[in-house]
Amino acid sequence: MSRKPELKGRAARLARLLPPGGGRGQAARAPFVLLVVLLLGGGLIGLLVLNSALSEGSFQLDDLKQETKSLTDEEQALQRDIDAYSAPRALQRRARELGMVPGGDPAFLGPDGTVKGSPSAAPTGTTPLVLAPEALTAPPGGVPTATPSPVGTRPPPALSATPAVPTAAATSTPSPTPTPTPGR
Image (cartoon, rainbow, N blue to C red):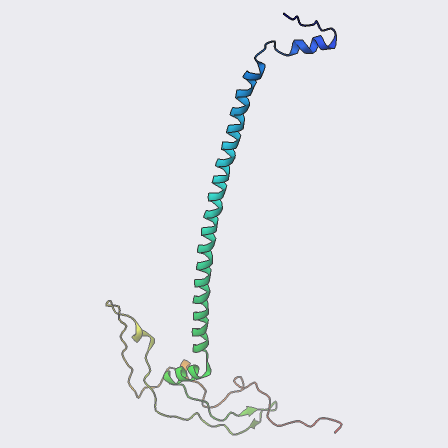
């Protein structure tokens, strides 16, 4: 049987720090394997959670893109409606439905108070059917009913397109006569 050599000095102090025993390799291997298995299992579970979170975010992104596309389509449809309502012909048609007529020849006031041009009244034609705003209220049944006003009545002053005689405040355009330029 072999005897261990005796250590002296620094080596003896280091040997006292290590626990004595011959089965050191077997006992230290089991906790290490358990630690490695736990780290690998935790890593796999972490990757699974991360992958599911990324796929959930991808689904939400697709939903938001689809919603953005539908809202953009709706915005474009509304913009087309606005353009259709503000077209000159549509404005003219709605103005005629409200009883408005094109104005006559304008007259202008000069800075000294003289009237330039010959004013004329707006042409009077057949007065179309004008509905009062209170006639368009919906009854409890949900279908709005319109009660026409008599044909012979005039529309309210707010619907009139042009006054019969232009005033100084209504005309702000310069006189149509050209002024000579100096030096010619």
